[in-house]
Amino acid sequence: MKPYPIIEYKINGNIEVYAFDKLDGSNIRAEWNTKNGFYKFGARHRLLDKDEQPLGESIDLINGKYSESLSKIFYDNKYGRVITFFEFYGPNSFAGNHEEEGHTVTLIDVNPYKKGILAPIKFIKLFGGVVEIPNIVFTGRVGNLFIESVREGKVEGMTFEGVVCKGIHRNQLAMFKIKSKAWIDKVKASYSEDSYRAGQLLDRTELILSDSKKYRQRRFCVDCFRNGSLSPRCKCGADTFDMPFDAQPPRKNASKARWKKFFWLWYPHIDFNSRWSRKEN
Image (cartoon, rainbow, N blue to C red; front, side, top):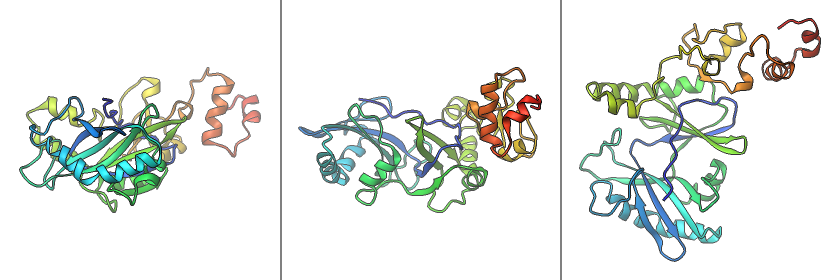
């Protein structure tokens, strides 16, 4: 059964996204087909049965909460085989740990056989308002203002952990996540003596601006870049994000085509050809 993909921390500010509330729980997979309904269940890296606690509870929760509604949608759309992905959590779940309390499951993604995970707009169209899905807290291009709002936990509809942003980039599903500072601080405090577990939960660069000198790994704050700051570390202290390759400043000996792509992205008002003829880079 196909596992759920690892969600990147690298923020792409150049695509339109839907930002979903990131529920703090455990990822559960469930496979469905027309003959058996939901018949196979798993955590991220292993199969599940009802005897495994607490994650085994998700089997009855999925069947009771989603089986009828999802089956109808799958039949209506002629999906013969589907892998569905859920988040399993409770009121006090944190970083994959669950208390002895009531739990629930929420549908987060759907992967019809040989079609890949559905694009966010189609996922919302098919399932939003029909079954429970995470809150949609933002649509559009992610910028520094939204990133800071997530970091500070000020986004309406967002719970404790953060958000997952989903969009389409080069005809492929693109996903990245942004965590709140409060959640990150709690992880650091809870796992201060367990660096391995903390490393599993946090990205290496979380809240740390990149010091990498490798050309393709430089990170920039857009406003400072526009004002001429080309340092790999943003000096103003603003949140940064990884730029796509074409948006990064080219090397001095880069081709004319490379420089032209760069200028079209950042300086569309400038006459590139006249500037190139004067060798003003």
